[in-house]
Image (cartoon, rainbow, N blue to C red; front, side, top):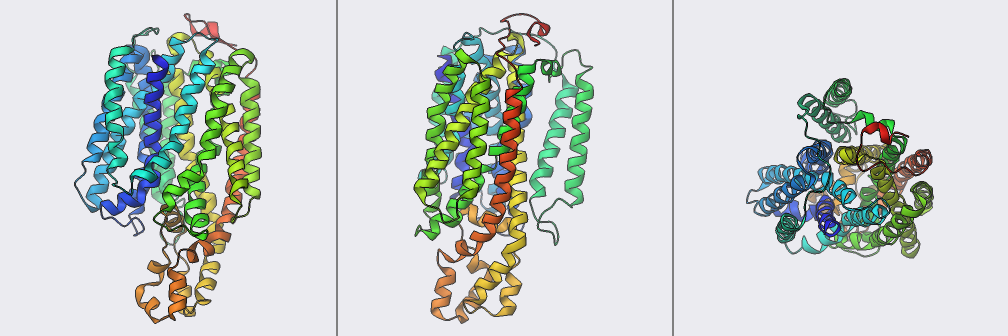
Length: 553
C-alpha cells in the first residue's frame, strides 16, 4: 500500500514538473501570448521554474512538519492541494498576460502540493520497509518519479495539440483517486517528534533560497545591451541578499532548540556524502533535458523534415531511451544495493554518466539517431544505477525520528541544484551562441538576398530568445526580418527563409559550440559526484529508534 500510493503521488508530481515544457507553444497560443516578445520571457521562465522553485523552498519545512504531526497526514494534505490546483489551472479563462499570471500563480500552488507529496513519500517508505528491502522500494519510487519527467514530455506532446487545458486536467481524476486512496489506506507508523515550529529558520531559509533562485532566473535574461543579466544590479542584489539570508539561516539553526534544518545530520558521513553526490548529480543533469529538447525540437527534427507543430511530440518520443534506461537500472540496482551497499553502484553510475556526457559531446549536431538513442539509453542506465542506491544509502543512514527532515534536506539540495544547473547550462550555451551566432545569421541571410544593412541589423537577437525559439519549436527568421523585407526577396529565397530548415541550419554550429561547454561542465560535476559517492564509506544503517549520536559514523 505504501509503495504503490507514494509512487503514484511522486509520479504525478514529476509528470507535472515536465509536462508543461513540451506544451508551452500550445499554452501560449491558447492564452494568446507571444513568448518571443520582449518582456514575455518572464512568463516563459516562471511557467517552467515557478513549480520547481517553490518545491525546493518548502520541501524541508514540509518534511519537518511530517516528523512533527505525522508523515501520512502531511502527505494526504499534499494530494488535496495538488488536485485542487490542477483543477484551477484547467479553468483559466483569462487571456494574455493576465492568463499567464493565473497559470503561474496556480503552478506555484501545485508546486506546494507536490512538495508535500515528495517531502513525505520517502520517509513513509523508509518507515514501512525494513532496511534490507528499502533499496528496492526506494529504487522503484525514485526511478518511477524520475521517469515521470520524461513521461510528461510525451504526454504533453500528445495532449497539448488537442487542448492545452488537458495538460492540467489529466492530473485531476488521478489526483482525486489518489487522495481517496491515501486517506483510506495509509496509516501512521513512523516516529513523531512533536516540537515547536522554527519560524526564524523557516523564514530566513525560504527568503534566502527564493532570492538566490530569482537571481539565477533573471541572470539568463538579457539586460540592457548585454546578452545576459549577470551584471544587472537587480540580479546582484538578489544573489547577495539571498546568500546573506542563507548565512543568517545557518547561524539561526545552530542556536535553535528545534531547528528545521538538522545540521547535526551532517555529522553522519554516509548522509553528508550521499547528499553531496545527489546535489552534484542533479547539477549535471538538471539542464540536460532543456539542451536535449532544444537540440531535437529546434535543430535535428526540423532538419529531418518534421514540421515545427509536430516537433514537441517527437522530441519527447525520441528521448524515450533515457526513460527506459532509468526503468531498467533503478529497481535492479536498488535491490542489489540492499545486499552490497550503495557505494559501488552510485559511484559506478556517476562514472558511467560522465562517459555518457562525453559521448554526447562527441556527436555531431546532425547525428545518426540509433547512435544518439544508444547514448541516451546508457545515460538512463547510469543515472538509474546512481539514483536508487544513493537515495537508499541516504535514508538508511538517518535515525527514524529525523527521516522527514533528512529526506527533505536531500530533496532540497537536489531541487535547488536543478535550478542552478539550468542557470549554468543556459549561461554556457548563451556564451557560445554570442560568440558565433551574429556572423552565422548575417552570412546566411545575405546568401539568400537580404541586404547587408538589414542582415547586420537583425543578426544580433538576444541569444536567450534564440534558445527559447528553438525550445518552443518556433522559426523566428520570419519575425526577425519582417514580412515587408520578405516580400521584396525572390520567391525562392523567401520560401527558403520561411522554411523549416533555414533557422535550425543557421544556429546548428553556434549551438554545438555552446553545447560542448555545457557538457564539459556536466562531465566535471559527474566525476566529482563519483568521488563524493565513494567517500561515503561502508554501508550504514541507523537504528530504528534512538538519538542522533547513535547513527554518527
